Image 1 (tube, one colour):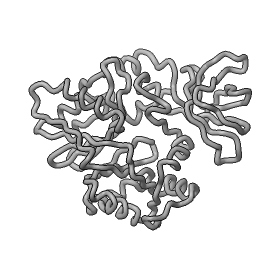
Image 2 (cartoon, rainbow, N blue to C red; image 1 turned 120 degrees about the vertical axis):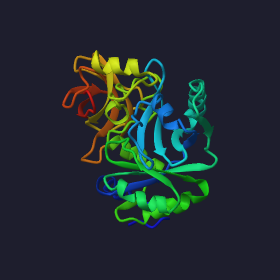
Image 3 (cartoon, helix red, strand yellow; image 1 turned 90 degrees about the horizontal axis):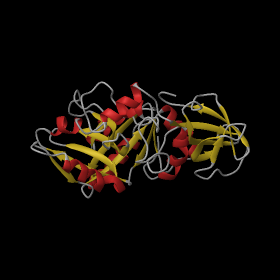
Length: 314
């Protein structure tokens, strides 16, 4: 159990992520507050995740897609009794709010920027869901939402209660404090892409390997659905984000080419960190569909590399 003021070592954070729950204040996220009697059904027609069967206290991770099916923003949804709280990356919030308002016609729905009033604490790991009661008791609106494949819960709270919420979560057995800097290492180690680094508005959900976590293929219509559905069921993404183990030391700047042994370019690196399991480098990067499969061997900067994890349709 961590003291609220202490930042555990990276190894301790790894252990919490694997066995308990890593708790982190998400300063980079803003908040859209959605109210009105038709808020849930209307938002369900915008996002890729299925909100229709969810009840108050439930949540979801999803994507707001453009008409062409490409990612506009990641979203984390918490259904409250009188409102929906939507966590959105701050630099995408204005764009998303403007887009939402374009799709409001006669619905009883209002969308406002609540970033000055609400903040977010996230928990990632197999015991994240066990923290919900503590977070809610401390004043948060919390819900399960898994955006990593490791288990997760999200807590939206008034800014004046964020410290109390964070402290309550960290007081639970198996919870440990994380940091933004540590997460940049841990996410690459765990094959988790980041918007603006590993994928952006030029990518389809399937290219970012997010379809299993963020997209429902059993719900009704939503913005961008036709393109996303057709790519899933009548074709495939031309490239996919995968995790790669690279032999040898040394930096791999974003955009470094991934090639076949004969030198044919088949992809690029997007993120990298030192491999914690015996040297070398772990990287995230795009490979063409044919190569984006576990066990495929490629080359990067003259070094041998192997795909070690590939989500979804890979």
